[in-house]
Each structure stands twice: as C-alpha cells, then as structure tokens.
Image (cartoon, rainbow, N blue to C red; front, side, top):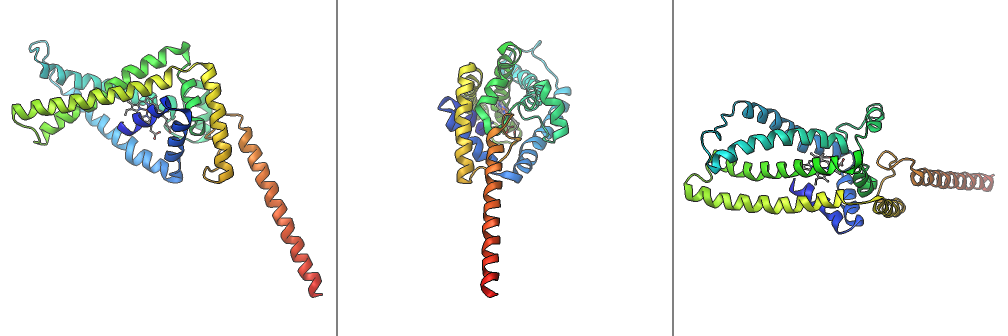
Length: 268
Ligand code: HEM
C-alpha cells in the first residue's frame, strides 16, 4: 500500500513522473503476473478469507464498553470488511483481475479493466469519471481511508499478538507511532486520490498526448516493448511502429539476399 499510494501520488508532480513509474513496474515483463499473484493477490486473498473468519467470530462490545480500545477493535473489523469489498471492486475496475482476451472482451464494455499501463494517467483519470464523476471518487476515498486505518491499527494489534508491546506504557507509545504512520499514509493516499479524481476532459486529453509521446520515444529507444493491449484503442502508434519494423526487416533481408547473390556471382 505504501509503494502503491506513493507511486500514484507521483501523478500530482506530473504525468511523466507517474508514467515513468508505471513503465518501471511493467519492465518486470513476464515476471509481473508472478509478482502480482505471488506477492499481492494470493497473500491478500489469504488475509481476506482469514479476516472474514476472525470478524465473524468477533465479540463486538462497544454497546457495553465505550473505551477507545473497544471502538478500535470494532473499527478494525468494519474497515476490514469494507477494505475487502473495496479491493475486490477496485482491482476489477482498474486491473480486471485476469488478462485473457475473451474475458476482457466481456468485462471492458461493462467499464471494468479500465487501466491501460502505457496510457496510465489518462485511463486512470477517465475511469474515475464514469457514472457522473462522483460515484467512483466517493468509493475510492472511503475505501482508501478504510485500508489505511486497517493497516495502521492492524500494525498496533499485530505488535500485541507478537508480544512486541505488552505493557500499557509500551502500548501507548506504539499507539502514537501507528497513529502517526496512519496519518502520514492517509495524507499520501489523499494526494493520490486527488490526482486521480480531479482531472477534467482537457487534462485527460493532455495526459494522453504526453503518454503517446513517451511511448513513441520508448519504442524508438527500445526500452518499452511494443504492446497494443497495454494501450488505449485504437492504437495507431503500435500499428505504425510494427509496419516500420516489418519494412526495415524486409529491407535488411533483401540487402542480405542481394549480397549473397553478388558473392555467388563473384565465385562463378
Ligand atoms: C487513492 C486511491 C487509489 C488509486 C487511485 C489506485 C489506483 C490503482 C491503479 C491505477 C491500479 C491498476 C494497476 C495495474 O493494473 O497495473 C491499481 C491496482 C491495485 N490497487 Fe490501487 N489505487 C488506490 C488505492 C488502493 C488501496 C488503498 C489499496 C489497498 C491495498 C489498493 C490496492 C490495489 C491492488 C491490490 C491492485 C492490483 C495490483 C496490480 O495491478 O498488480 N489500491 N490501483
């Protein structure tokens, strides 16, 4: 979450900063799905299933006891449930969960799997404008803040479970540190949220122009692999690049053939 929200907040600096960071992530190439599933989705699903079981067995007692700790215990469970729903919908909305063509052909027209990594800022910003432009921003703000609370308070409760802060004084100190961490991350998350949700049609069009320029330069320099599926459609740049590449290959092939023919003629 720290990395994700920091990368997203780089959009506040510029479209270039955000696109550059996304290229960095996607430079993992065929290892990316392994990192996504092994390092993010499967651990998250494990935590979610285990968390639902914990929340089901929770004994909420805020109606009898109004102490902060009792409230924190309840909020930890409520924010966990909200985070679960948020993450399921959020990943479906932008990433899509899976990336095989027949499945994408069904969910993309339903306004899911909207994020295109090589048009990172423009597709993220325009995805937030669906349904009148207020449903997704509200959903993202509540979901992001619940995730931040769940993580910050979860660090404090994990420290107790692992025996890291057991005395009341140590727990008070840990509370201050986890609250400071939570406030800091909420600040970064709100910056990321604002960057993604505050853009109008003109900003989106300008972002797309910058992304297309970066893609063209990246292709020419050879550090961005050509990929139509990671780009907004129709993708004229990829088509044009592939046509130019094919023409160049054809020319080299012909040159080699001619050179070969000349060598044979010399030998004769
Ligand atoms: C400010 C709010 C947020 C914005 C604008 C945002 C934006 C994005 C974008 C654009 C993607 C697509 C990345 C891709 O497909 O490569 C994504 C994926 C994802 N986001 Fe967020 N996000 C936000 C908050 C969060 C929070 C709070 C979490 C909590 C853990 C989270 C977890 C994820 C996960 C697990 C993925 C899929 C990871 C992947 O693609 O490998 N996001 N997000």
